[in-house]
Amino acid sequence: MNRAARALLERLFPTGLEHLRARVEEVRLPAGQTVFRRGDPCRNYLLVVQGSVRVQVLAANGREITLYRVRDGQSCVITTACLISVEAYPAEGVTEVETDALVVPQPVFEQALGSSAEFRRFVFANQGQRLGDLIRRVEDVVFGRIDVRLARLLMTLSEQGVRPIATTHQQLASELGSAREVISRQLKQFAGRGWVGLGRGVIEVKMPAALDELARQSD
Amino acid sequence: MNRAARALLERLFPTGLEHLRARVEEVRLPAGQTVFRRGDPCRNYLLVVQGSVRVQVLAANGREITLYRVRDGQSCVITTACLISVEAYPAEGVTEVETDALVVPQPVFEQALGSSAEFRRFVFANQGQRLGDLIRRVEDVVFGRIDVRLARLLMTLSEQGVRPIATTHQQLASELGSAREVISRQLKQFAGRGWVGLGRGVIEVKMPAALDELARQSD
DNA sequence: AAGGCGCAGTGACAATGTCACATACGAACC
DNA sequence: GGTTCGTATGTGACATTGTCACTGCGCCTT
Image (cartoon, rainbow over all chains, first blue to last red; front, side, top):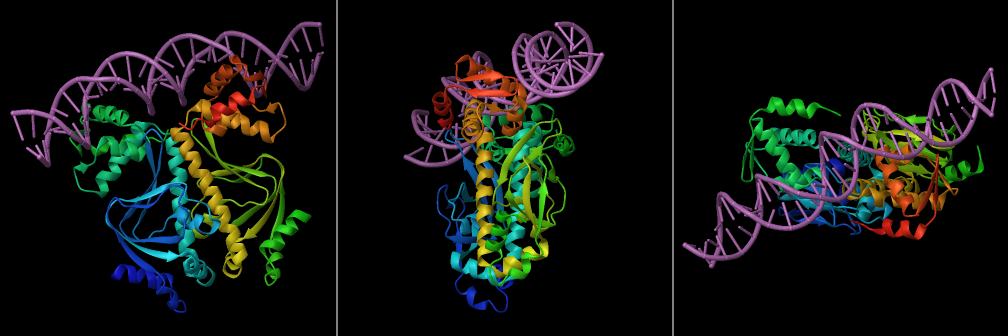
């Protein structure tokens, strides 16, 4: 078990709960691995030590939308909520990169919840954040314009990742719950204004200020 | 305090936790009352004893969408999640009818969470259901056709409420996150096929089987 | 070099949302 | 009975977004 995993474990199962640590398993998942599927029952509490899990919903016709991501040191709302209420997963989770996770069996989860205020705080803090993400996503999808949403996404990707951005139009569409053609058209507009440069599987943000101004429009 | 409230209180604060009951307050809210606003901090855990709270998001241009409802014996995800994570409310809640609720102060909530497995189960069961509602709502909004969604809504309303349905096109639009004109057009189509009868503020479902068939279409 | 496959471009059309009005209904009041 | 007023609904023109059916391009494999 690596250092980050051990630190997280010690934080969540502090003195007095050491005996629970042994029942927590560490797993290393390759990128692109499905962690849970829609309709699966929840049996374990999952904690991402290091990596990223994308939680998404798929439509029959191939369209999809990303609900939120679970990143380093976070846990998944759906798992938490379904674990005790015994609902099936309403969405699916896929690792985006190689991901290190801790698997806490349901009985251990319940026991820790009963005996550690720190553990409860962690669980609820995660719930709150993920739920907030989700509601903002609804708002965005229902009321937001696609150009604004795309501009925002491009800014986010260019700030946090390698430049130029390595992604396909289809991936952007899946992120936003839109269709590839729509994204292609928007990107062409952006490119026409000189805001971005387009290549196969590559997008270069050339005028971040312009994109940013568009991204700030709320309505 | 009425019987239903007392029963709920006894269930959630059983023998051993009687002392907490006294710190829970009962309130009776009139219909149309705003329970919490977007951006408000969460200070109390709210339990609906009898009534209904609609949780919704409003857009700048007047459009709105209902996320879910909290009904008899249920509690609100947002409140639960924000209470401990100290996030502000990302949506707002409004009573739809006169509503009886229990107000559990944050410290009492934390204490109960630490000492009662029954209380924890209740809280998480509610979380799971409400979160499931929310994800299904996202799916519906992003991938669903408006005619199908409207048919489903009309069936739900006609099954559970007084017939004919007493509602305006605007209310239906707000429920679905759509625009009034869109709903009016769809209803006119339904009426043209003889599926419904329309009046001012009133909709009569005439051919539930036809609506139901439409409502079952998933894609 | 020849396919094959994934990615992107395109035009026509359908569905939904927006805007600016016009109308119609019902309650309250003369 | 009429008048008036506020709310609910109808409507056409248009903008935006999604769908469909293709085309073409670039890169990899064989």
